[in-house]
Amino acid sequence: MTSRADLLLWLNELLQINYTKVEQCGSGAAYCQVLDSIYGDVPMTRVKMGAKHEYEFIANFKVMQNVFKSKKIDKPIPVEKLVKCKMQDNLEFLQWIKRFWDQNYGGQGYDPVARRKGAPTDTPATIAPLSTGNSRAGGLNVGASRAGGRTPISGHRSGSTQPNEAVQHLQAQLKEMGGHLEGLEKERDFYFEKLREIEIMVQEQLEPERTPDDPTLLKIQAILYSTEDGFEVPEGGAIVDEEEETF
Image 1 (tube, rainbow, N blue to C red):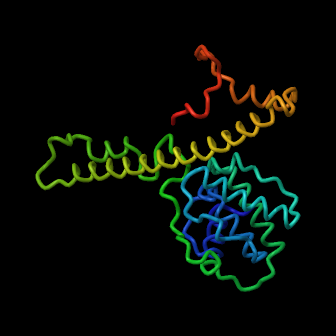
Image 2 (cartoon, rainbow, N blue to C red):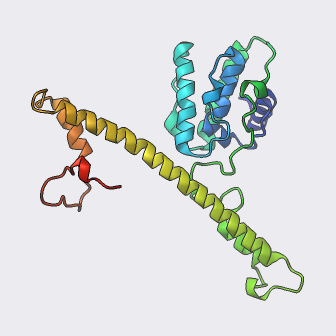
């Protein structure tokens, strides 16, 4: 099997990007452009090369799934695993992509920058959509140990720049967390709108003059209005009138 180093070297040379870890392929952007190097007709304007959040990763993989369908490529895409940016899952899929490219690339010239119309090639600052451990910058613990040790931050040596470094690191960490929060809010709103559209459609179909006894629609409605254990529905019904809803 091709090693990680060889795969990254091939990928970076083919697409003129600067990936440093296989996990970064979890954004789906590189996979899409590898396919474009073969077929030349992937809608690269819909591929976000600098995607940083999971909902953006999923959108990239939707483009890829459409390509698989149109080209009749019989290979399941484990999207739910790949977007988590785990090394093993993306390594296995990248190895398959490389074999597929070797078998199907015709040797034609390919200009990756032109094909993505100058879209930024900078890789995301973080590997995973939402870091739960140490980030690429090292996490708070690393910053504390670097600026701490035997010399407390509040009692730094004359001429030491460690306190400034610690503050800059914390500011960068705060900025990164703010970006994650913004992405999560967008992702929440994205899926909420989908659920709201489904809810409206179900309500319309369950009007008395239509098919109020449709079991499938009733099950969908039950799922939409189900609550978690310990949550009590206020008196007056589970459904709030649309005119009274506030967000």
